[in-house]
Image (cartoon, rainbow, N blue to C red; front, side, top):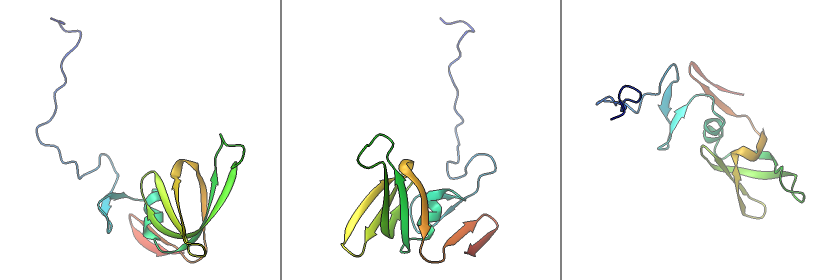
Length: 119
């Protein structure tokens, strides 16, 4: 019907979804999400339980243009960071898209494909 203009796509019958394409390395860390080295969420995940200041900007807000959240990293995912403030027991869910940078109040763990270092 469509001649040679459009061909239906073919898919391989055996695909290993656990192996990332190209030169990316993937490992597992105490969670069900794969860890690809050097992504910010994985660095945050490695430092769960550490005190931080998260500097966040909300460009569309006039009242909350820039905000600093202080507390302990409880969880981190591909698109979010959860911080608990131990002083008032407030919990904050921060979207990574709004995160400018994180200041750690103690040494951090940084895992790279070839070494694991503490800074």
